Structure formats: C-alpha cells, structure tokens
Length: 440
Image (cartoon, rainbow, N blue to C red; front, side):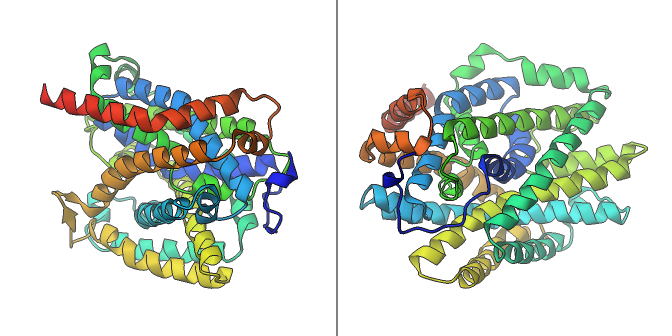
C-alpha cells in the first residue's frame, strides 16, 4: 500500500493483525443484527421471500459499500467525522449525522444487551422467566445501567481490550448456535420451519416494502452507514487486504444470521408461537424452549451468556464510534470522551428501557424501543449508507480507494464505484416505484 495516501500525522493504535480485525468486526456486527434482529425481520416479512431479497441486497450492494467504508477509514485514520471531512466540506455535516445516528441506535442496543445479561443472570439463579414477567418490573432499566457502566470501563482500556474480547467470544458463540441448531432439528416444528425459510411465492418479490426492509437488514447486518466500519477501518494494519477481510466478515455474518433462523423458528412452530412477534421474539421463544428441555437450564446459561457477550461487542463498537469522534473533534482525552459518551447513553437509553417496564412508554402505538428500531434501524440506515457511499465515490479519486483496499486486483474497486455512484439514482427510482405501487 502506498503510504503517501495515508495521513502521516496520525499515530493511532492498530489491530494486531488482519485476523484480529476480522474477529473484532465480526463480533461487532453479529451480536444483535443477526441473533436478535434477523430472525424477527424474517418472521415479520414472510420468511423465505425476505431471505432471498436480503441475500441479493447483501451481495450486490451492501458488500461493496462495506469495503468502501473500511477503505475510507483506513485512508484518513481518524474518526467518522474526520474521514468524511477529508472527502468534502459537506462531509463534516454528514459525519456528525452518522455519529448522532450511532448514538440513537446504541442507546437502545444497550437496553437489549441488558436483557441478555438479565436472562443470563436469571439462568444462573435457575429462575428463567418469560419475557412479560422479566419486564413486568424495572429489570430493563437496572440492567441497562449495569451494561452501560461495564461498556464504559472496557472502552477506557482501548482497542486491544475489544480485540481480546472478540477473539475469545466469536468461536464460542458459533459453537453454541450450532449446538442449538442441532437441538432444533429434532423438534416437531423443524419441517414447518424449513418450509418457512426455503419456500416463497415469486409474487412476494414484487412488493416494494419487502425490498425496503431487506436492504435495511443488509445494511444493518454489515453495520453500513453507522460509522462502525469507518472507525474500525481506521485501526487496520497496513498489510491488510480489505476485500478479503470484509468478505470473511460478511460470510460470517450471513452464516450466523441464517443459523439464528434455523435455531429459533423450529421452536416457534413447535410451540405454536407467532413468528411475527417482533423485537422480543428470541426472548419470548427461547426461555420457553429451555424450560421444556431436560438440560435446558444449562443451555440457557451458555446461550444467554454468549448472547450477552455478542450483544456487548456491538455496543462497544457503537460506543467506540462516538468516543473517537468526541475525542478527536472536541479534543478530549479518551477518559473524558468515554465519560461524556456514557452520560449521553444514560440519558438517551432510559426511554427505551422504560418502554419495557410498568411505564410502558410508547410512540405511534408501539414501544419506544421498537419505534427507534423501525425508524432508525431501517429508514435512516439506508439513507445514511446511500449518502455516505455517494459522497465518497463522487469525490474521492479512484486511485486512493484502490490503494486503501490493499488488493492487487481492481475488480472490487470497479464494483465499488459502480454501486456507490449509482445508488442515489437507484434510490430515487425505488421511491418512485414504491409510490406508484402504493397507489395502484
């Protein structure tokens, strides 16, 4: 890689190796986007048709943008604000918008991560509860406060602490999910789950809403438009091959997402539950499953322990985006930036925590947390990813992106610029199609 294209003024700590980046990035994205969100999005959007649309969106559009964001972070070796400021003057506005989006998303991620910790603690106490019972009191609030405090303590130790945690957790998480898929395959609802996830009506693919949510999930799965990729990319060692590393991460994310579906839906159908239950699907399904099994409590301890660890990883990634921006743009020490970020999370995450408590805080007839996820987790993430790709691809010289990718072949850089430059126009065409379809 040509070091003339890197910012020589930066002396940032780096991931120890390319595999370290892969483990850290995979752990950051897999926690909630795949284990928590993917199954419930599949359940709410008809099963197999959604999976087909999601995979197409992932391969054709999301993966090139993922590579672009990682390469952009590597070029500037700074926060998301620094990276987009380097592309264009308007980039600083977009960079801060991404930070704000990440603040919003991370605020409710911490609440969900608190649920996983609460379930892990309950399992250790041999008192696994139904989701409604768990949220009948203020468990959502207390565990949210605990998780936010723990995350702040880890961030005080920096990048290497995140790396060490990720290397330990990812292999254990994959093994645990594989074991639960094996158990699910023995359930009476397995065949129904197979049909749900593999059989679709071609007419369903003509619905604009299906594609909208599929693209939202593809962007969500790979953490596009949220600053994670740019920030983690800024710590990449010089010899890393970005296309290879991101392909491994994307393949890992997709495999775990599909495994999560195979893990949950057989139990859903076996016990006559609703696959479209929404954000609490995993938390309402698995406790009931574990109660029915002879070794269920031990599986519950292992699963929710790993679920907490994976969810905690993505919280760390989101918080790192915010901390890096505050530290560099406001010229704060790492400790002060972590303190400011933690204070923001305590204040902004509380409404989401209260939405699953006796207060039952709602917006537009749905829990406040679900409202943020539907609005920020799909609408805003898609817009953010498209705007960011457009800014980078229309402003950055292709030669700089080629160098930042660190790959001999230019095939991926060609794809990146085709996708990035055409996305804004494709988005407008999609909005027209959605409008026309809605008036028919």
